[in-house]
Length: 413
Image (tube, rainbow, N blue to C red; front, top):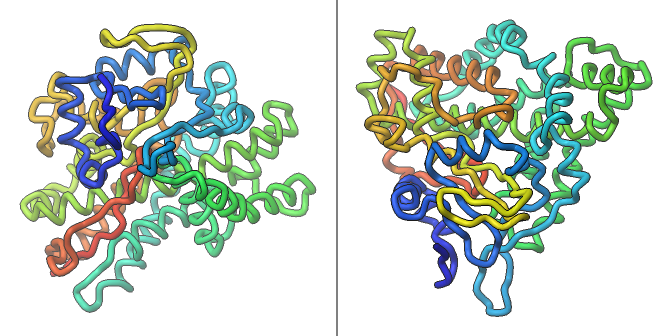
């Protein structure tokens, strides 16, 4: 089924702010939805997403194109596909298939394994506690700009082995990379965003060069780890930069989005706040429900390597599939009361909030830890908090890839 009457609803402001009603309609009536004129299909049911992700030979992760708004012959803005180079796609752990993906991921895990992340929890807790003690003295706190955006990027800097002071530059680079593939960027803005992303990489390139020259010694930072992997001929220099770029883009974006969403849910549910204060052991379970209910990523791409069929829809070779993680996470066939926040689900991690299968987000342990600490700190810092009614409605950044609040103004106490 296609939509030829103007812009696909996927790009509408209503769907940006609340995609779940739209996804529900697609799951029920058009589970493999073709975005007219783009060779792209939006996949929404959990079973079909599992089928795609579980078959990388048919649905490759080496995606060198992405949707964006572009001019058609008529003056209306419509979606079109725009190209990345195959080289860009093939050196990134986020857009490769086995065996290259396995080889690259093995290097990243040396820094982001669960045990290493656990050892970072204390320093992140200190960061958060200090930030909250300095903010909100007037009873108001802009959660995104004061807390959820800057602090995860500080942790990204530390993961890389860079000074905290470079976090703002890393944030610029990461957000530019993600906005570039957001789907809402006209053709003329893609190159400026790419330039901004490259500019933010300068300190990373400098640190990597110094590591190669032996003028800095950071045995534990990811920059040092990828440098040694290059020395041992496990990866190339280009693949090393691909790894570092993905960690910068996804490492901050995913955690920021998750922390923002989790705080919004609690601000709208004071009963849930109070329960978590009474039963703090439930905070990790709540984080999983926040991930399921409104995940930080709206979708990732796959490419059909051959003519195939999915859910009764013919998929020509070369077609792109946009896997709608939030739609799958609210699939009633998988989750009873899928639209509700429940802390009693039998398998709380059985969701695709961080993707699924071999491409499960490599930074998931770090994001989970940071979200847990953030919510624990916010609950400990306040007896109660709610949305500031004077600053409504809330808005999300327009994107087909991520779901991040533009702002989250809170009233404390």
